[in-house]
Amino acid sequence: MNLWNAYCDGLARRDLLRVGVAGLFGSGLGLPGLLAREARAAEDNSSKPRDISLIILFLKGGLSTIDTFDLKPDAPAEFRGPFQPIATNVSGIQIGEHLPQLARHADKFSLIRSFGHRNSDHGPADHYMLTGYHPLAGFNPSLSPNNQRPSHGSIVARKLGPRGSVPAYVCLPRFHASAGAAYLGAAVAPLVVESDPNSPNFAVPDLTPPLSIRSDRLSARKELR
Image (cartoon, rainbow, N blue to C red):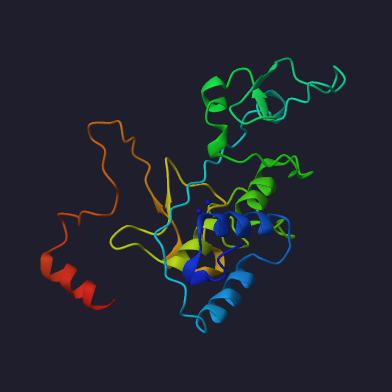
């Protein structure tokens, strides 16, 4: 979380974005839709897979939209924010005055101002945003993971798999409680990197075998795969 090219073996960036947004709006292009596309893709070998990457910046408790990307300058004072809009490098698009560098690159991103939801509870709302589904009865936001449905990242990992030795799904700088794989299983759960990449001691976890485990034991474990 990168239609035009129809099937899962040829997903472009726009395809992934559309699948994600469609899932959020409940139009049926979540996990079931992706699995159906996989079946259809097996019948069509004309598309060639392309390298893609999708980065989702999830701002938990992020900036207010009326102060950043949807200022509503013509709205009554009790609705609009205190800041002024500025022009971007795309005609007709304005954003908040405190985002001048972003305004110079508006031709490189899309604003979706029509999306919203009415859940003010961060736990269930986070689940909705990261899976495309409202939580059902019994949802416990204090669990980690708390997924009743797979996150977008796990769905992409299930469909596309790893790229060489690079994991298909990575979370940083910490794991979000609703970023899990749910019933898709641990194989498509994220690799969580909690280290600071700016630290001189930065290291990605679980890549170096513990010194306390003998090499023959590691080899025996590998044979179980």
